Image 1: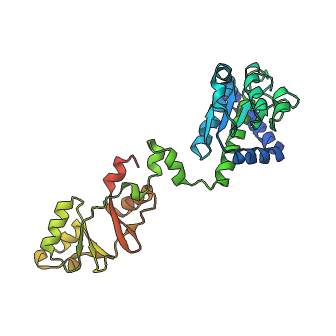
Image 2: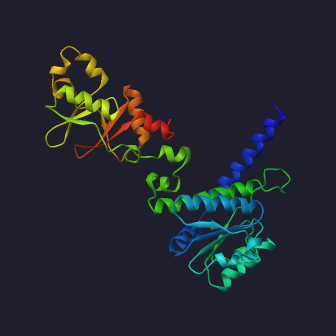
Length: 314
């Protein structure tokens, strides 16, 4: 076996042990941290230096994208004016494995001076950060995966997981849904995957009545450009759909027929609130190119497979 693979597996196993120890160590302080954040009227301000700062940036980003307003403030920049970003009503999370990082002193002091709730995350129980914090989240003692106990590896992995645990606990309390998530992720692959049918559908639909002559129905199909038309009852309910296949099947005497004679009744439909990804899967599985979005038996829009592909849903 490769020596490199041995190292990789040892590192992963060491960090996995650290995560297990972290899970076992969690207690009332975690609940108090979540409740402290929920009670805040302002933002969650996250700060940390070095590797802790990198983890802090990720935590702030995760919180902000899951319904908890948050920002990262660099502790050194805080000492040169950015403390003005930290106000009463906020809650501050400071990360320092040693709990004695010199650069965090000013932001910790600021929270004490203005009675701003402070949540500290550190690996030393008697450290200054832990003593000063309103809520102290203590990382368990676990060896760093470097084998020399000097390179932040296991400790940063535990901090990252602890931050994710806070974010998800807050997210679940707020009943944060994929639709909410999409609000903060309108672009890219994730935004596309969470797009709803109603976001992409066209409301200018090709529709004809049951008694519409096929001469008029063909004009509607041609003018709207979807290659289909819906067929509706007098009260507006969707009765069927006329597709290219229906036209071919009724080619003999087509122009003498009515829409009701040619349509496929009870066509496949989808709700406007469903994910567009589900609509695309339905179209691909049925080998069709369009779906009508229907709510309360009334057609509300039409979605073409090209709309999904243009939005990046694949």
